[in-house]
Image 1 (cartoon, rainbow, N blue to C red):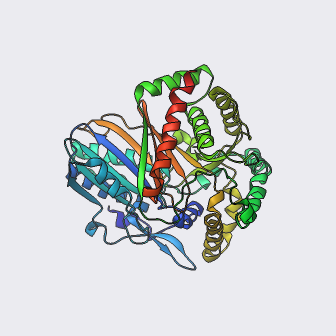
Image 2: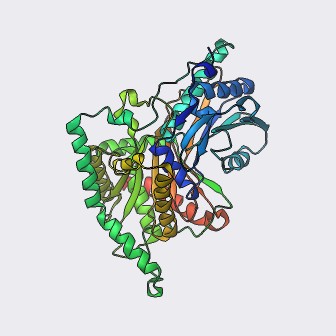
Length: 460
């Protein structure tokens, strides 16, 4: 039995799909996966594994169809004619990797997964995943799926993966995990968010007025001061935390009952503050993310999808004198969020849009993000902790993985989006920016200050 025999004609787009689609003017909506090998992989087998993944998770083999009345994923009939994987020999892997990652994808036309193997002395597999079908958690699940298919093809060239037809992609798989009283707690979290973040809404209104008033031209807002106003000249900047430093940070965190994520957030707060030096009335707000798979058995979704929520991290106006002061504030705040439905409060207010026509729902999202773009000068930093990549060194049978990481989408219009991933005992922090000729220096300065916070200050 083939996929044509059992696959439905279409997969209905869900709320998260609509939101990510509507964000395409803010960023390139690609999540990028990099796997560096010690040696080579089998290119033809990687290509075959990717092709089979289009069947294993049917949404990958679809194109997005958007009209005034419909928003859905339709199975492509040209998959076998598509160029979704390439091999390139090069003496400059880093440059070629960046060239591949910055090319955008169109979910209405292009393959939802694109890959290239960069072959030098060793191979580097670069993969782009359309954010419309998957968030960082979904992208990691795709890497695991690809590694599994590849390894099984090594043993059996005729292997065909099971087709995931029944797996749900929407938030209902999360909602079904909670009883009535737990759902009431989530509703309470929604109102708490509105209350605790209401001054951010008021602040946004105030900022909008100030931006139009010349007398506030010198006011310093709590936003990373990138200067580009477009989507050209794209580039990634990457900062690595290597194993020895990782072990030191982990031990430091254990001493104060803080996670690695707490330590990184504290370091970001202090590095941002040093660079921005915001005015005294500026709220110090960082938007982070939470993988909602934490509420599912095995922390695994039923299908490749978007299941991320937001965390509005507010530690007050004062950071404290020392790194430890800031860390304790971040730790205590994050522990509070984790104890009270972390990540679940932002999506429910949008649920009523499901009963409205597609045109209206997309119009609401478009209007919201257009407003955000117009007020880009007041946008606070976004830090996406994409979690640990649970690949083993031998996950691709016959090859050895040296390193693996994800990068968040390239942000446009002065937005900042830092992505954090872990693999083994290393951490990769990345940012995709536009206007790199103008903005490179300030990003490098931030990473320099971040490094200082994670080395000098942590041990004083």
